[in-house]
Image (tube, rainbow over all chains, first blue to last red):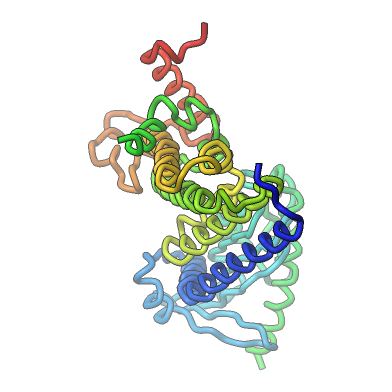
Length: 198
Length: 205
């Protein structure tokens, strides 16, 4: 068998890793703009979904421009929608689940009722915490209220209680993350309302 | 001719999933629908083929003591590249495949082919062997994806086949079990059964 010295092995690994690193960085930088655009379209699709509009990729930007305007409050971005005579605020939410970031959008009408919600996550367990990304879960928020109290997730929620939403069984940590995120969202929402009232 | 055989052998007698029983995990996970199954099949084929080619080209210069690490670095690079391309060109599918693209790195088929073939064979046969094994894996994935999506969701690549042929109006219902991972395992079992009863020399004594 051919003999390889330690020096050779070391230099070999260094050279290999350096070459591959260059290949990876060049590709990553070259493809970045495309990926960013995909992300942006996905975000717009999520926002439109909260007000019940599901758009194909090609129509998203147009629908978004027509119905959604971005607004600022205390350096935070939020959105206003205007669609078929319905108007209100779309509140962005950011939080942490069990394994990584979770986020979502809540669409509210002018009397603080939730008209639509959508959630997504980076890496929650599929089938458990990952369920927050399903329509079934998002649907539970419709009709809930954010007037005087944040919405929170709880086991066996009382359907008539406007602040309670049924949590995910087997996804307690993720559910807690969602509750936390909704609480922070509620304070943002109060601030936005105060700002617009002025 | 010999190279052609290297490509076609893994379709049947040397199939990585049904004969070597490798790569089962991802095969259960990504075949609930046809589209992710197809993308996964192409991704794995590209990774195995290129990894085989690169390792085969380097094989004489790789010190045996660090060969596994060298293989892993090459495979990881290829997988990250595939991941970047998926995110840039088929974003929704890349979200569906999520962690499974990254897990191609640990797919036993890839490392298995590198160790068993590419380390000791010239580049062209290695490339063929990689393509063959990737496609052999792909065939099973596509077969599973077709059956599971058609009977589980009533669609094929998102096209509502069952609705168009009017199956629902005569009382047909989708089988929810089809889209659960265990059903993929059962289907793989059925394929293995069919394949072994056809090939007498594959049967255990």
